[in-house]
Image (tube, rainbow over all chains, first blue to last red):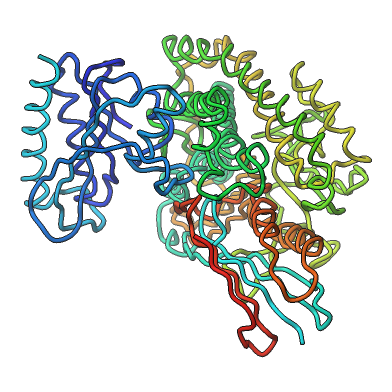
Length: 154
Length: 474
């Protein structure tokens, strides 16, 4: 896991994926890039998968952005709201944004507004390089997060 | 007509599996099998890789127990280099393994198993999970989440990341603890000690109302194997191998870890990718043995830290010599968390943890090396054969879940015998059989597996394969 050290930041960005499966790691690269910005009020976490331990950090943020790779048709970076879902598929040691939000609410008493940013990808084979599509998506995702941060943290 | 019941998939375990229950012509349970339907192949595709890479590759077997693999792999590498690792490296490896035990056991108890007996066996599956626990007992759920976080923080503090840190290497470790890391770990101790004690009290209360579960969830005689310290103290990374029987009598002690194959055989079954290890002198399947928390507490006489020692004394009252109910794996797991937390606190001020003398260097001095360490789920063996250039020629891994395979079969059969009368599939049995497996906390390679609304597919088959009855849940 990589992270910037801004606990209790207003904007928490969680990029999750496998950096050894090429484009699947684009979300972690987004988190790494954000950490390098060194912007106050933004905490960036890059991790392999979403785990229940993130619920506490989520509960203490003003706004959360989950960043994920999306394999399939389409080449648009999408951003949608995430609602807590207590009935979604709960995983054992890994989970999904909606479930994690619900866990934050139930176990830590708070669930901030959140978005789920998905970056279109095309190659999740073994390797660490990004495809041109994922590389383009990374740039767009960072722009979207910067806009979001400007709106939230102003 | 003989019949067979199949439960597929089994949920809230780490991986994919199914269960078959065989009925005899009278409709009584004759046997049961826990099948693992995943294939990984690490033993084969690691062939040809340099020995020095294996501590980086083999932890990828699993996202829950990578620490166990990296430590066993490093120890196998130590044996090939024929070196004694520096004291600081040994102490640091032990600290990381304690973190691994804490985080894995916390996941098993608070996230996966406790919802069953705290929320009620027959609560709807979509509510019988950590969310349900958070809704009814948020303090406990929060404490369990943070307890696991503590274990992961130890791992991350030492290895740089929570999952798959490339930290332990043949001959030692890559980096020491820092003063800052030590302070951070110390800050957690009061809270995690309190959480662990809460979990223990809760489970002891649970035992008062779960006597039937203690009796039928894998309660049978077997052998138990684990590492133990030189003074019969609980051990998790060093020490020596010991095997006791269900009366607690030591039947094999101080076994040579490099020659484990002289006492442990591995049976292969056509219906599962999981091998079934057994104690060779008793043959297959009579040589069935159990590993993991229950076994480790059965092979030792003391934990070595005061609070856990008190709990161990109480734990031992549940058996005559050895504690033989698999339901008490949960109790053993909690006692191990308690011991681990106490040991972290006890050892944290050791100046060696900050030492920079962390690796012993050597070339290839032995063409075969075996590394043995206690994973949370039980004794883990990494056995490497290399050529003179250190290139891997052969690998054998004996995983805890495999060593519990025969006992898991017997647990399923015992629970099924209690509930099944004839060709019907009683609904209450399904939740309990799943939990019977969960007592062992099997890790089937760490593929993620949904819980709650996961479909549960049960098929009742005649001996000729004819489908007699079918039930689907979720």
